[in-house]
Image (tube, rainbow, N blue to C red; front, side):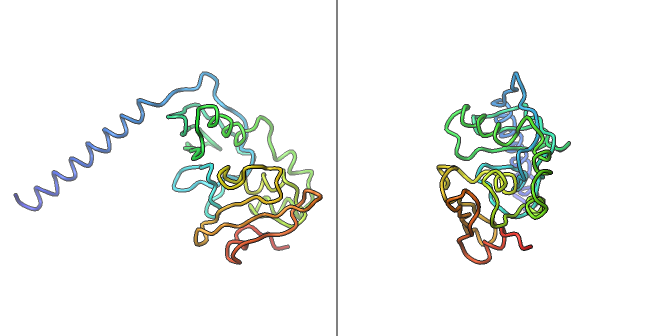
Length: 201
């Protein structure tokens, strides 16, 4: 069989496989009877078009306070909708049920615009949040708005003294350390990873 003909056949099979897979997946999608609407809770980090609960730090930022409408879910792990006028895909990598997924989505999409709260914080904290970084002295809610939620796999308790995030910088973790007063006391991790999150005044 001529090589050109073989390549054409491979392309045709690839297209059929893609379309078939897409139709199979789209058949599992469910429209929510009540879409989750509101605003992005915090700065989100899309990775190859996905906003994920794994929340790898680095790359593009979808800022806190963008309008959001999430109206479709799939396989208790995926969700789709509009954020800030753009179509987005969300993926909860740690969800074990539809309830887990919707709980995470309601953390990410909140009913009140967080920019109203952001405006009441000090100029240094506001600059850090707008940069999606953290400065020593920030509270847990301020870190959440700046970095979003750490993965549940690594940070089981948000009241704990350490929150672990992973960075795209060499796939390295960085820990945000909280002191007894509940504010950020420092950072732990490889210097290149710490630079990803530490705000320099």
